[in-house]
Amino acid sequence: MGWLLSVALCAPAQHLTIRDVFKSMPDSLMPYLSNNNRLDFIDFMDSNMKAEVKNQFGGNSIMTALTEDSLSIHMNHAMRVDMLLLNLDEPVDTIRQVVVLAETFVTDSVYGESCVKYYTPNWQPIYQSFPWSEIQQQRIERILLQNILKWNADKLNKS
Image (cartoon, rainbow, N blue to C red):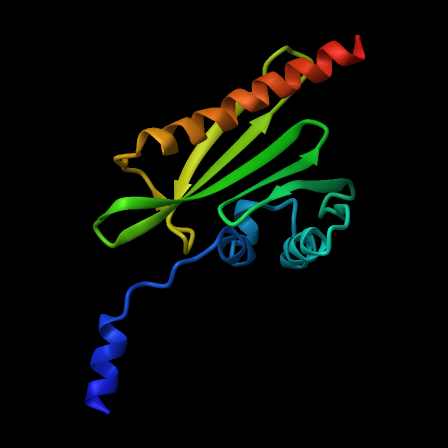
């Protein structure tokens, strides 16, 4: 029994996917969506169906992308949420993965206003900086840039 316990304690930490952390996300961090909404999004995307749910505020929210380490949701006409789950090359303290949560709010102006927050996979806020690789830094910047470019394209196409 002691041998089994020592093997379990020495086993590497479980490698999570964005699905895992999205399912366990506290409702307080994304009040638009209930736990059932989040599970429905994943089921719809996995079934190649349109991933649209009635959100907690009576509107429709649409998940537009889901991969092993990222997702995108249009919460409503004025808010988009993007999430990344990034693996750190070297753990910082006990942190091996970081959730990047980018919320972009758009109005009638040309640009969206983005707010980026960082969390552990069990949704504890992180207030320190990390040694991102160049590719990871580019992925984070790409989320912010694509929100600006997408919003500009939408505005131009409506004109």
